[in-house]
Image 1 (cartoon, rainbow, N blue to C red):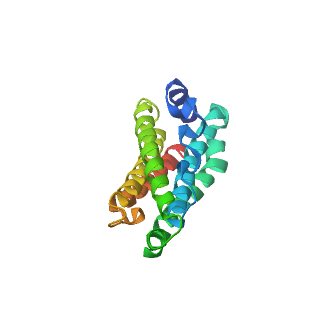
Image 2: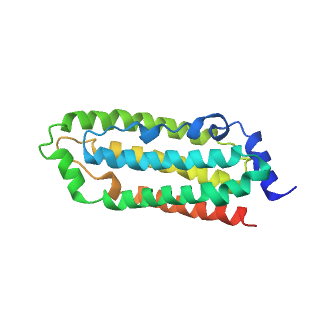
Image 3: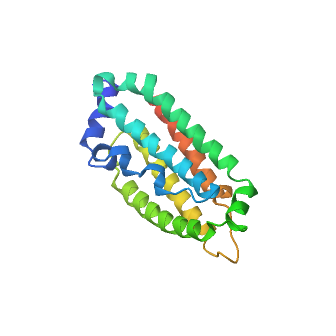
Length: 200
């Protein structure tokens, strides 16, 4: 059995979000709104995570014969671009101006805080549940990238929620979180692991 067929068989045998739900069940943009630029930052990152899962799903759905080609010449580049968006968003939105624009006299301040609170709670619950449903028997490299994508989305939601928990007395910036940065770096490592597997 060739490597492509082995990956596909393990994938199809798994009863998990990647095989049964579009984009792995992750909502577009994480469900975040656009009341403030700070919230838009979360939406951009969540949308990129949503797209990574969609690319994994599409590469696997092509069948064993075309999996390597679909990943190497199509979805690999797309995933690379989405991870770069995630990394750039984490860097750009860590600037103090984004949290300042949210909490210094913004007319949509209250709406944005409520939106962040509700959306982050829902996204955190969804991603935690979905990550647990991934089949651990699927190919290790595919599982690794999918799992870290869910975990990054979960950490984004958790840090966004944490950032407004003491509002209006004080606030923090989710994009400066060390834990979120670690998740993004780990996601990049898992992507590199998958590249090594398909190139064997």
